[in-house]
Image 1 (cartoon, rainbow over the protein chains, first blue to last red):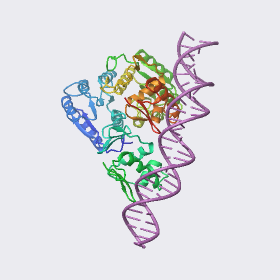
Image 2: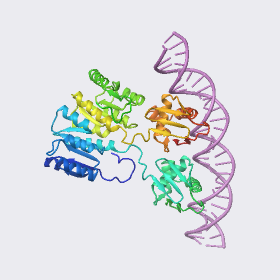
Image 3: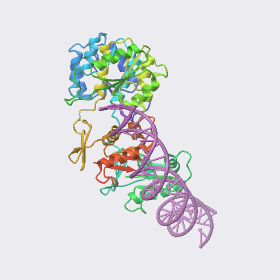
Image 4: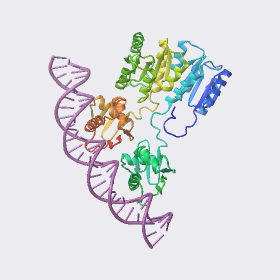
Length: 238
Length: 238
DNA sequence: GGCGTCTTTGACGCAACCCTGACGCGGTGC
DNA sequence: GCACCGCGTCAGGGTTGCGTCAAAGACGCC
């Protein structure tokens, strides 16, 4: 229900469908594309392995009954180099087959005929748990010429040292940095930092903007990064 | 059949079984213990949530039909603070139920009656993929100028000797070290160490941080590694 | 059943943070 | 040219949060 971790526009999830029955592939592709997945399809194991290597899918849906090789071999082939979630489809209900596939490295096993809703739900579950735990750590680093803001670690670095910020200072900085280059209205700042019932206490802003500038700007009285837009709000520029 | 990933003598995998039918619980417990799993059992949702918080299982087996609360609520209760794999058991075959449980955060869904072999295979799959990705051995040893933390062996070494830590002290240290350099909020620390229902008892933190510092810092009253960020949380620095 | 260890709880001093009010300055509009 | 409004700056005081210590309660072990 919620887009994972942050409001960044997510790149679409890439699915690799491996099945030799055209009607199943068609049904899957239609349903997946309707839900904004990006879909590749393969009809045999060899192509599947090549496609997986080339496209690096986020999740694999694999039918065990392939013309050219055993499905379990495909699983092992994938597991040799990737931990991508593998969702196995199969007509076989036998317990042994399931155990074999799962122990070879499959993540889930669905027997045909399957309900599309259930399959999609299992797919969502597989993708969800493959998401990185907490640490993204890549783009959370915002740098300017004078200081660096690490949004994940909640750290500010400047001139080789860590800068100590109070909770309110940090909160204010965070809102501004998350809107780098954009104007943030005074009301929005007040409500995000001090709570929804605040909206007019612009003196708070003045005091705390001054603190931020004093701690981060080279020349606090002539700010280059924390820009005042008179009557409107503030803007953070890198 | 194979001890998961690596030759390190593994601590046993801890399973939490939640089911109100005694015979199912018995069957599961017997089979799991025979395979060297460590097993806890709960017969209702409330005890289950408490047990999960207290014992931190590596995987949860959850029957949706509980006497005191909806199984989906148990899933949500767990997902509020942990990503532990959840394997759902249910007598319901309905597709909607499956979708609801999976989307609430379950990892797998098995309908009763189930084959024990299959269940165990699915359990192995769930535990396997929850393991940390390939890069072990990098972070299991964290060294500072004064002491060394071995996350795998659960040991702390300092000045040529092992430092004795109580379970709570260790748990707190572990959370901090796994987030080296990052700020960890008081709420997150409390919930990870004491359980999801704790979030405001910051006095616990104060007491245990003091213990850690006394045991590990050169000058406990001027800590260099366990840094307080007033009003926000704590941070471990190497 | 007694003992030791670990956890929880309370009280106290101190430092840090947040709020508040006063003042000066520059720009805008009348 | 003057008054007004919005912004930046500074310093003081109330409040909160943190570190420390000590003692009681809970738990497991022998």
